[in-house]
Length: 228
Image (cartoon, rainbow, N blue to C red; front, side, top):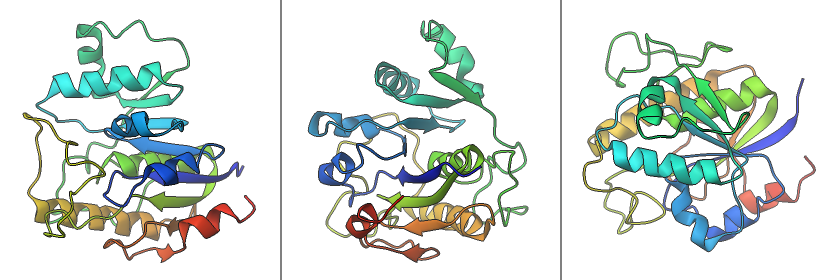
């Protein structure tokens, strides 16, 4: 059953407070450190997804999750982190707030140049190839949202555009585990290519500018004027 459209929010430099506040009445999925925008907006995501399995900065991750648990978001979190949540006294979570998710074992740790890179999603099982945003897109598809609109998905990491790779220059903290920019671009482009091949939902890129060209593009502000 189709619920209606949803907006998937990346954390690229094109993302603005004005765009987020325009989504107050829309179905939205966010990832990463989106809460760094909260002091500028009244908007909060309906869904929040963190699917990564490796991150040396557990303190940052736990701090992020605590902020999101205190928001109104339904949090979809990697079940691989359950032990850490309990260790950091986060086990007293209100029922219905957290959904523990599991991604496929064969694709989750692959880079874009490894053998066995997938060429499509394999829903309803969640494919872990790519980033939390790609897992969020699959969750949205499984829930029945269609079409999916992307914003803040610029890519172009480390390209020297005289602007940060994210919506704030303070996005990363000391101790974060980061891929090399070129490897990050290759991985995300490959994962978006998989998403573009799916036959379950239509995906449209509403990011102004950027390097993501495997989807049909539409202007974000014009989409908001269209009926759901």
